[in-house]
Image (cartoon, rainbow, N blue to C red; front, side, top):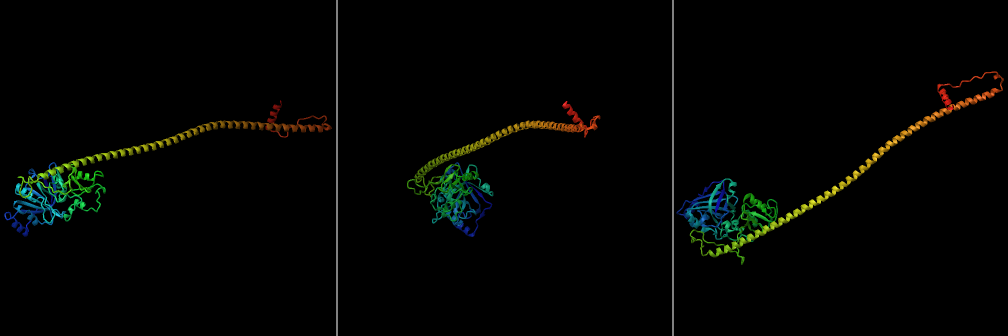
Length: 480
């Protein structure tokens, strides 16, 4: 089941030109004044994640949504395309987006469920023009909400996921996801189907069409393993690089992403590929996916599909889906194993690198500590030796001080004794001189008569002083 949220600040404007009124009146005489309006806005398409998008009686409603109509098809041309179903249309809105110059969408309300089934079976998968390649894709809608807040319009309701509104991107998805049964081709990388849209307003289609350019991740600039979001066109690298595509899904809940190399679509919620497979495994030729009539009675008589004609297609479809599921599961399993293997190798390499770095650091620190310790021990030994030499020198200094003092005292005592001895000798010499002179005098006077009968008196010394007296006394004492 699908729901619509339209971000629009515009109001519905009725289509009231004279040419169009005459056209409607001519085309549908029984309903000359249907309610046909036009408004501008951005359409957000959501599907219930837990249910299949295949049309079934339980998911039918009286509201239909035409995903994309080429812009070369005017409103009058689309009304002409609707043809005999105009009598059952009660409300029709053309929704145009200023950013999408190559297409517009149409919301249709019909009188009842059977009219909606007839409209769907008659026009779904039909070309808008026999000379063009664009197909009409119609979806049953459960509800339509209009809001002026872009944040509310772009936020998926609980249990719903957003789908792209580009018809080519919708055709890339498998029918169970997109609800689109028939396609022009499988939109693989060798197809040039994107050229059928004039302006290529879809970012994803531009990336697929511009093969000469080298796209890069919008965050890190990586050129490998690139994925583009089908909803907003964000280009990011895969989980085996920096994982910016996965981070974009977690931030925005845009779960469908296209790998640029393989052109396969990955569903992050379902964790598997949801790309459409419509090629025969035997001859690798394109196979048109036909399905049974979607009306309540089982056949509507206008679509050309019946219960009997769809048996073979259903069997083939189930086989293809089984092969696809098995392939997707096998691929996901192998990728998970590869991821775990590479993560373990990275963890092991990181552990070895950390251990080698720690070992090298420890070895360098230990060597440096040993060198420092050896230098410290050497300095300690030198310090102890110098301290011992210093103590020895201090001790010798004291001894030599005592010896020098003793020698000085001895020399001073010897000098005093020497001086005393010299004085004593000088006194003795003087005494001898006096004695010798006295003897000479006596000898000279022996023969003289002048001294006969005389008296000999002592003669006082020539120099008399207290110091000489003391010396003579001392000398006399020594002689005695």
